[in-house]
Length: 524
Ligand code: FAD
Image (cartoon, rainbow, N blue to C red; front, side, top):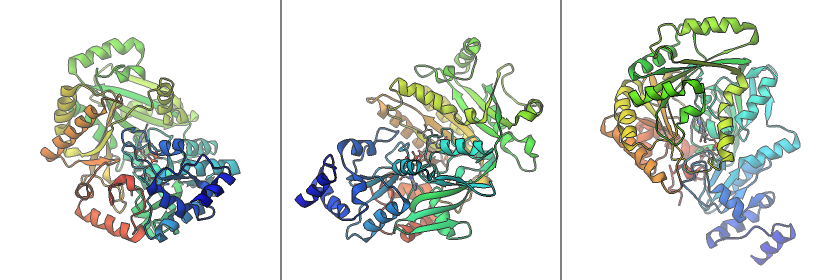
């Protein structure tokens, strides 16, 4: 022990404190391995950062945080655990933008993927490289989607499927699905991956695709970090548009709102220019300190009349649509969107539009983030609930939850998202679990709370889930949070769960990876 300490201080790492007896065993094991030892940190601040996420509700303190400078480092770390008598748990942490401790490893090792990103940037090796044919880009799992976007548009190409917020890591979103308003048309991000490099739970670096090592490929996509660490993903590319026509329409009638949404996402047999490029939906309510909707899109001069409509109906539904275009076709896009809007059932006179650059549109959440950060409100607890609801049960969900539970509790302060997508754009061989209906809705309750009242939101989330169960609504959680294996089994359904377990036994048999998901171990 003293020799170890001496070594540590000799290399100027005195700040690394050995902080508990449990950690000591792990520490000795890890410090004994060259190349790993000098990339491990257990100073209080680093440990604290790795025990927090965007949710800021769950906190699990790891024994160590690992700063890899190469893919080999990650493989060596996992190999070490795999071959130990008692393996230690390992969680890749992309940006830690999960909300339930999914990227944490209680008493284990958190692999800080941001360190690899920094290292690659420093060395100029990038981590983002455009394929020769410009049909795909190879991206390190540690890279952020915003950097992928910026680099690709320089080359006038871009991926087609995004998330609403881009400061997320590629490995993090591909471990879930990566959804947004493009999903109905292009599928989630996991449907747009051609190939990956993955370090499995045995420490093997394997290249996989639909053709080669397809079992691993399908396991990892939507696999909640259970089967390996994604170190490279090959993402398909298309020509990048330069501008976006961005439209919002208001509805007071949920049935008219969903009817329009469903009609617009039914794309089979339609010409490309007859399809929107993006479709989402949100609720507008009076609740919340700043009435969320006021801060954004709608002109100040219209706030009063929108507010009085909300007072009248309690909730308005806002449909959000986009059409991408290039400078050359600006006139066409106006004509095209006019045609596409024919026969819509929105409230007449409540039509709003903007024209923005493609990058500005995709990066639209960043401005809000920076504002909240400057007010110290970005790091508050986020008791989020995200779910998929089958189309056939969305009306029932509206009456019971939007007009029932939300109205009764009157605490919702964040965005509530509601928009449909097509099951045909998902691949059921992948691990992501979705409802068994051709069209299903994503519903997201994206609340922020105070440090002392997040339980109220948690209670509301539980009530929503209970309402679904009690009423036979076949809900699937997105970014799922379950605590028992029975719940996980229900989440995947019997067949998919069987495959999930078989794949776990094949690729991570010692149950090392992503313990924070609480699927195969309860993280203690
Ligand atoms: P982390 O939280 O770091 O990790 C998530 C899980 O993935 C963990 O289990 C972790 O161990 C594992 N993991 C991380 N990196 C890797 C890797 N390289 N290989 C294997 N496993 C890995 N999601 C959407 O789909 N659409 C949205 O529009 C959307 N908007 C969001 C907006 C905000 C403001 C926030 C905070 C989140 C949003 N999300 C959205 C959710 C987000 O996609 C997930 O939380 C995602 O996991 C975050 O990525 P991350 O890099 O922070 O992952």
